[in-house]
Image (cartoon, rainbow, N blue to C red; front, top):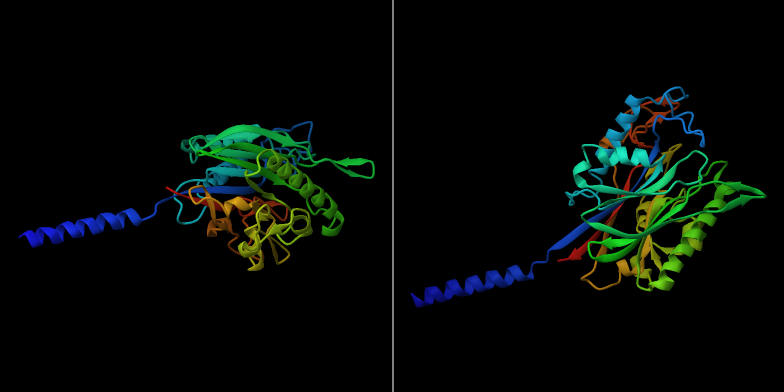
Length: 345
């Protein structure tokens, strides 16, 4: 009998010790989504939004606006990998018109229980589109935020574009800085417009350098629609991003999207060519740092079948709201992108 009790005791001890070896992790998803002209139906006399009104070319009615809000809210609720059952902790957005459309978005019944809050500034963009950051109040606590203006001149004429949004705060109990971008488009051609994106990259680098000067070990995540691919000069020559963890050195910026891009993954398509304009890059301490802190785990493009055009010449492309000048009732001309952070509990 004593021997039997001893065996049972040893088995229980082994089971307890084995349970102590199991590692549990907390995961947080950070997402970015260019939502393709999320405008209200009101004509703003200070911007060129006439097309997105009931009387405008797009016949942008209350019904269409409500459908768009419902659609985008549904996507936001699900962005992330299969392993994550929770909505993103942080979401950067591009191509939103104003604070009101953001309020309508987070008040939608699909996401209202997530308690998202808004950080937004009006940019001087001529079309009136801005960037913004949504955060889940139970997970992220903002400390400070500011809008950094991108000043671009062509001869003596200023080109008005989107500001870069900088947010400092606590993700759970860890200090992070998030930068939300929407760099100048390729309108007029890639080569002709490239100087504008180089200027945007220089501003981004200036912001990052200024943060690191004050907080050398700051965790910084920059995200956005950069209108450039991960291998473009704005990323590789100005920001000097690195796409391979093995080559990453302390103080450099890591771009996980570069590996995806080299494998042919894209977030938008044009004339049978895929581009990965929607990107994340971040400080090296999210790769090389204390294992009790949040670390980068994986990056991805969120592209379930319902976000894709199902038939026709653009089959597989993002299912957009308008195509060929006609209303199609889709989501956006971009797929959302995301990164996941893990922390040992």
